[in-house]
Length: 215
Image (cartoon, rainbow, N blue to C red; front, side, top):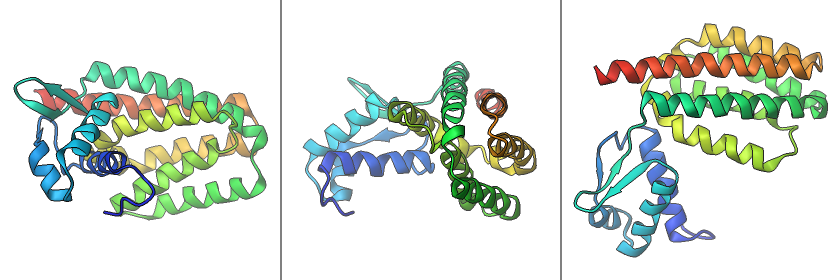
């Protein structure tokens, strides 16, 4: 792991976040500070700060007698996150539409086309994120885009565990086609409506998954 140019704690937090998001660290699993510090060949001080960063991000909980564990989001918390995502991402595309270049629209259409043809889960996830990022890229409100990214990071691990979200590519392709068409027509209000509907559908699927896990 290359720590050059970044604080050790920041880079450790980034690596641990990847482990949580890809399922290497599962819900309820302990983060043993000593073992993790040994794995990354660092002292326990930056590891402790990295774990605190994850706590602030809502990815872990720290208990006095148990240490840190990977935090499981409830269906209600997922609902709250997706409600916020729908509002924020709808606003991002609304603000972005009038600033989109022809090149951005071409690239978004290419991502949309490639997503329809790939069956590799990892590539599906990258293309899905790229599609949305491109269509939000004309938004000049960087705080808004940062908030969207933070919410995605909180939920990404559930999208990984619940492969149904991206196995339902044909359904989402219809949603993406509607969003893209609205952007190409420079219809900001329609684009916002389509994004909000799309996010709510994904959120409902994820809530259903988490509820089934609890049974």
